[in-house]
Length: 338
Ligand code: NAD
Ligand code: UDP
Image (cartoon, rainbow, N blue to C red):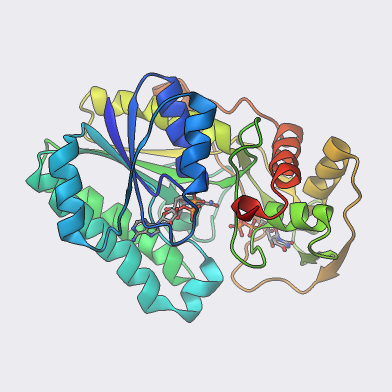
């Protein structure tokens, strides 16, 4: 298939572009580079030995988007482009609603105009809010998102659901990611956060490389086995492969489908630190801090539906995830800025 990958220079998009190219698809990347580097495109080409067509364009510029779609005649869109920093979204809600919602509305309009009726969307476990049961299945109701970032994910899911309801020729796959970490085993592409990382794994790798002095563990009084927060970490290579599996639903003309993408296993913050130390031999100094606002105790997926319907399941374990996250950080101490 000819696939337009919005946000394809970013963390998950770049790994998915590699997987698409490796599996014989064509990947056309649109990214405004607001949270990424053009070097990721060179690295995708280096890993795959294939050429990628790259457009530096903002989804909020509808005319620019339209001319790309008119030229490229794609079969499907995988929509990663969006801003994703939870804390920043609380401080700058307009920026998040504008970028994520207007960008997606423009995309849908342009897709309609060009007869592209297939879309896979990067959603998040955050749409479940505070889960009433774990593991979380796709039947669990959506919950209340505590921040504008999460709201945009939930709203975009609703927009795509309504668009598909009104036009049954649309095929929509909503993929709810749990906690993506890891990197391509080559160490050429990986997560490249701006400033001090908000997420656990990039924080740990920056402590390991010496850019940060110690990890703050947010809360040790949760109702979990060791008191620290439990999450379902998933290797970005597994996540990338799930997108290629999801193309089956597009090819089958299945209407709308929703899948959790996780491993089905939860790890506490202390278990992640231990796994990282085991995988790398590097000690991570940490101290306990107060709970972070908006955090929940435990969140992990039921990964059954994706296995049954897409024939996909995660293959990499937590040690692989830690090793590959570290490998990217070690080889790119300043991210793509080297
Ligand atoms: P990322 O920031 O690395 O990638 C997103 C890319 O989109 C970046 O390259 C950025 O430059 C681009 N972009 C943003 N706004 C754009 C616009 N208006 N026009 C064009 N390009 C634009 O993030 P990621 O971790 O790769 O996440 C990809 C998607 O998955 C996002 O939608 C994110 O919300 C979602 N997601 C991520 C996680 C996670 O923990 N990483 C979890 C759940 C969902
Ligand atoms: N966390 C932490 N210290 C950090 C960053 C995160 O203790 O510097 C914890 C956080 O409280 C949560 C887990 O690590 O329990 C995963 O957080 P992350 O921000 O990576 O993902 P989230 O699940 O919040 O989206």
